[in-house]
Image (cartoon, rainbow, N blue to C red):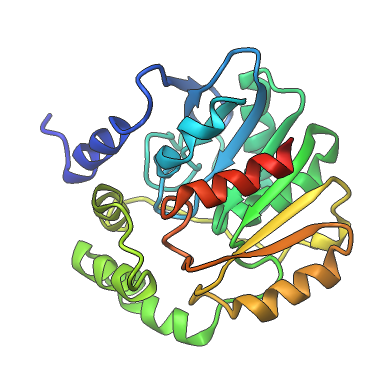
Length: 275
């Protein structure tokens, strides 16, 4: 069978990961989950959850630095584009996503881990940390959505054409608007745009998780120029919600330019926090 344009872009971005990266397909009741694993076998585990349409490969610019200290596990999300299968138990609700992550961590042999998510992956990370706090050492959130605030109406209006009638061109136009002047990696942009056209995607949201209930150390980083929400305002809300947490802005970043644009700044913040 001839590979699709999305599969070709996926393989091209996979080639940007360090040569020693392992590909693991972990059995869960919801289907096999693809995990990109890099770093020393005795390193402390760090699970990375991407934003929607990004796949676990989006962390390619972060993995080399993070993988010097941690055993990185970058996940293709259940229900989204990528190489995680959706077979077996149906994906119906946010509770299914937490059950899937339970099974995934079990399959990876991770009784405890650091957990980091971006965008939709950050919302999922919060939900899981509330569900299983005993398994999460430290929690890092990178420009989280639907946690401390909803989406700005202008962002939703811009996203609407690509949501109603997905196409590579519409997704590229949306990315160009949100990431203006940050110039994210071209291969990743192509992967993201093609991911929106993959049939059968099912992104489950659920209600907004109660972040005030988090009890582990939490780092929340907001993109200074994010068009998803007003970063300064939402950062203030995050500080009130998590008075013991760390909250900061990432200068010059937009929502969709993370985590791959100016990765060193993000890597440094993450490693300072995780250490």
